Length: 446
Image (cartoon, rainbow, N blue to C red; front, side):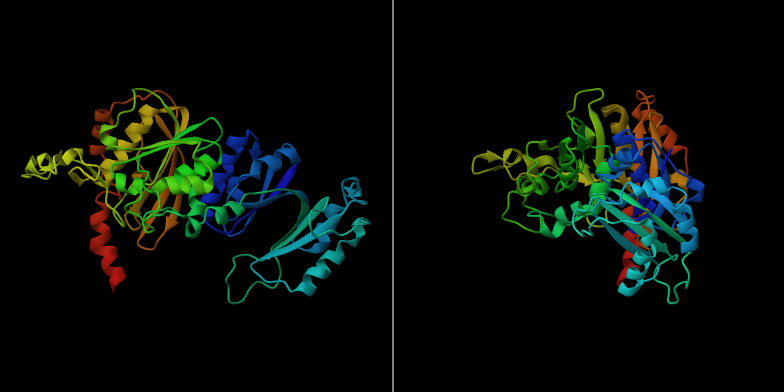
């Protein structure tokens, strides 16, 4: 297959390949690359794709992808690059009379404008005679000098590799600005940032005709991004105040509805409802194409489920105020008890095993203690296959974006899953809230 260069964003490096693989699945594009040869500190990845058209389709909704470039040559020096390019003169002759432009970039070192001009002039042997057009040219050519890890006090003097080719497609990083939470009409203290919300939508394979559910919807970030890509979405939460807009940073707006109107996706957000996910009203059997969520793990808000503390009396909910029973009032909030993180995750996997269609995906955040984490800590389920595990570190703790795919009918009951979990050592996310405030919170204060 023809070779291409994927020009990746140098952000969230641990998420980039997982998103790229999901994009290939979404677009039905066969892609091949050497995982063992991936250079983690480089934004450039050599891949094989069937055609330039397929390559453009592969990256068109990528968030961690800047562009994809048809490979023409590479090497440690420009002489090596030129020698490879000259092996295929019929390819560059096609663009001899077309409008064009060159983009010269570098990684790990800053090139001056004079340096960039010299690089462009060194490719004069291509014989392009068409007009130079900086906006909307018929062909754009890309040169990148990779000097290695950026941020060094003494950058490498020579590039470790130089890449050259023709740009055939771009990602959708502009959506990060479109969905920037600073521009959002309604948000809360747990609102997920735009870049990662969009990446999660790609990981979930959100697309036209799919049905996506967020069981801890909060202020609805995932409803927005998944709906943007065409999915129909629905969300639920035990706390209706987040949904209605009485618990956000910006009050006086119509809660999640304000954001739906802002992004013009109200027709694809089917509903937002209030209930305890442990006692959900969904009909039995498969229903959703994806479940995308950020379970509350206690750093900003602790998870809750319906219940009463030991010894608590029920009389408060039975009170009558102004002739209306307390539990029937619009602002009534039922009694809840803490919902331990490991219990949340086990219940979430059981929910996904039952409610996802075969091939559907569960995408969720898992908090872990850095020093205690082991790969075996990621909970499993007989009906789910682990697709990706990407880490976002915060020093003493991390959160991991876990992507799982349903591979068949639920093969274990909730009781069986809990029995298997109870036989394993305590995972690094167990009692995460207590660990965070006992250790990490104290360290941050100091």
